Image (cartoon, rainbow, N blue to C red):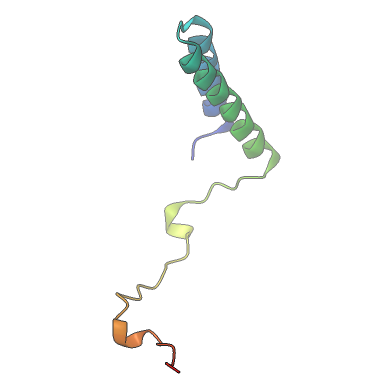
Amino acid sequence: MQSADYYREQAKEADGLGLTEGNPEIRRILRQRARDYVDIAADLEGGSIKIVHEAELPRQRHIGPIKMSDVARPAHK
């Protein structure tokens, strides 16, 4: 994940594009994206989001495909 400054720069760019865009729907999307980037930056600075390197993530065990014989079938009455 990038730094808070990176997301603030992305917010400025999206906001600037939103100000110059002629299509109202695209303008709305860009302005919303800018607000989202500002929120991400604030979360990073506030500690709500922790940046973790991929090597620190827990490994998930591969279970494999589920066989129909492994699935419990309801008893017929």
